[in-house]
View 1 (tube, rainbow, N blue to C red):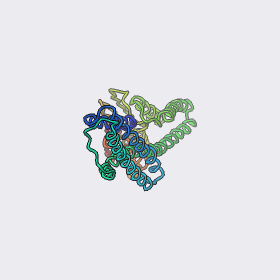
View 2: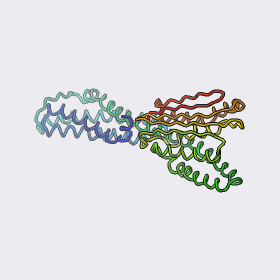
View 3: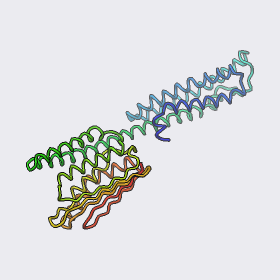
View 4: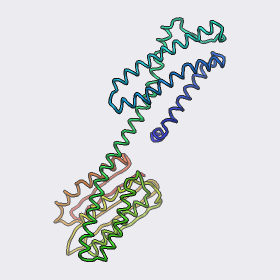
Length: 341
């Protein structure tokens, strides 16, 4: 409902006005012939809509962006009072026209005094203007919140991309001194990774197939770099690859696994990656081996910028729709992530 309101704000406002005018017409038609009823509705709603539009779409926007709400409140009260006075004048004018015989006598009860009419109509414009200004405030606040979240995400995204880029370029540089052919293969793979980051990284969403392929490319690059020194096992169970997901959401977990995996001459380290998507649920599990010698150092690394970054992104992108569980022992480090798509 919130997303529909945000996307179709103008349509919602027009619909609300149409409902209000219709309800007033239903009320007036029992007291007036058609022509006087339409004339009275026009005299009431034309200034009401114009003033309400001016308050909510012009003054309120400026007041919010320039932080001058006190000025807006003054205008709000002044124009609402003016509108009440216009209502009173309109009713008194129609009463006079009836007495002069311009309109047939209606069953509508007018106040004999302009002051009494003004006082009785005073709450109406305040309620109307408050309602439409409240909707506009909610719309503008949501828009500002969305801009703020995008800025936050962009900052977090920019922290991820250079870190990964420098790591891979460093690997290629080292390999070029040892095996040019292997370095060339690695460079080709990395070009796909970089292309994905440049073109898809700033999108609001990508297909699950695209994101999984990106992870596969990253893992292939790491497997080339590690060679036979590391066991890597991946399982991908994706039922609907066209499901939308935020880009570059899982790369931190893959990076950390390869960065912190155990390096032992006596026993190969291992990394297990398991991803499964069923209906609107996505599950990712990444496990890497650890050595007892690296335990203290890796505890510090595991709680560093990368993990903090991804936690913040998940809170922004999937509030209440994700569960991140981290399980660490002396010999392994495992992350388990559940997301409702």
